[in-house]
Length: 294
Length: 280
Image 1 (cartoon, rainbow over the protein chains, first blue to last red):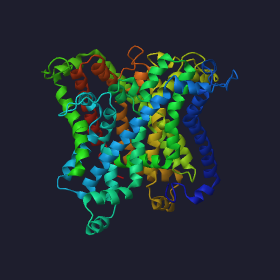
Image 2: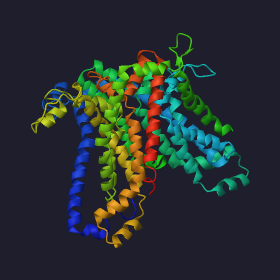
Image 3: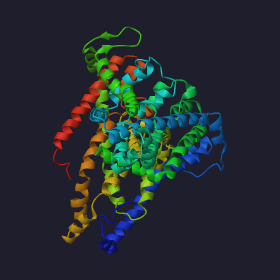
Image 4: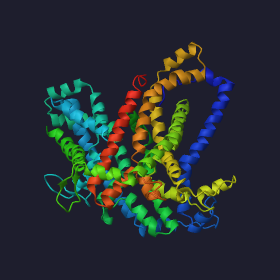
């Protein structure tokens, strides 16, 4: 990931007065990160299969009563309906990712490849939204979803209300456009000479070439919709449609602690597994976001 | 033109439209039942005379200040350290990023349990082993906000680490080599090469963190509901209450516009003050 060297050179690393503090530092940082990063997750796993009293009376002990209740997970899944809510969350995340993909690839194609004269205006309009804090549009966006202009549809309590607004992401449009900018122009010219129309160039040239960046967009939008709370809370008032993030605080109010913690663990499992599998694409996407904002 | 359709539709309806509508609504009285009435600056007058707004503004600023103190230096130092690792840095960054992956609601409900004020609560047990506590954490007006900051810092630090790390990978190796040939030790190489390279990103992250923390919502809602005694009531929570509890959309958008203006003034002042530093 990093270049061929950092502030420390190879000869520095051989010096005892550099090497010893560096190795000690590594151990300290690793332990700190294990406690802060992995610790709460491991504790949650333990608590998810513990009796409530164990977690309350002595949270740090290792199964003090000797009981391991695997059944907590099943109870949370069935009676707490965590499985059902996770299904909703997955539907919401998949739809959001798809809507984002459609918007940012077509927009990137227009701005980077087709480049019509009004492209500059469109580009400026999209960029400008990066500078407007989301808070200005929270309430009016809610009212918009309540009654979409012109068609007067009410999108609340439909997944459209959570699928479409996040697709208006200037950030996604920007990173995809930048990626398209990097595709050599000669490809497009060659395709045109071979008689391919704009749609053909888009579907069989641009999209296949940009799989890596599309993967990043999909991952980032899945994770952000998985984490979202306020928006689904507002627009999905029907419990049958709510994602797990909205359901958990309600479950927490009426459920015994061990089932509650088992529910939290189940809700955490999928994003963590997804992250561990696609770790590199994720971290690259985040790094990219820093580069863009800079 | 066909290709521009999705982006145009989505941005007109869900981005540009609501922004304009927000500005218009702030000078209207609307509760979705009575006909819309133009009231000029009445909403702003109403919001500014609400004593709760001043308190919420102070709480929000207090949160932002604490979040900067706790949350800003650690990721920078961590990223600088990790960028010197060979080979295993993926392990460190993965661990640092795990809290960011944790959905906020899961993290908050879990930490709410950690913050149990009884002596057998999670954190109080840990502190008890070294003879400290028990602390009331979320239950006292003076410690509720710092407790929220602690959780929010834990949840957000990993993101900053990754962004700094990405910025550090683009430092050209020959700069370090040149500094080394000129006799600069490790400390001076960090000070004169690494830090200046990070300056632009650091300033940007500082600004983004201020803007982000001033829009704090989920944490106070789920941790404390704004209490105890209003000590964690933030501007955004107040906007939420105005709109979705009281149904006063005009007041809610007026307060949103005020907050957005404050953020805009802040960003502009920040840009002006740091102009000239941010170039590498």
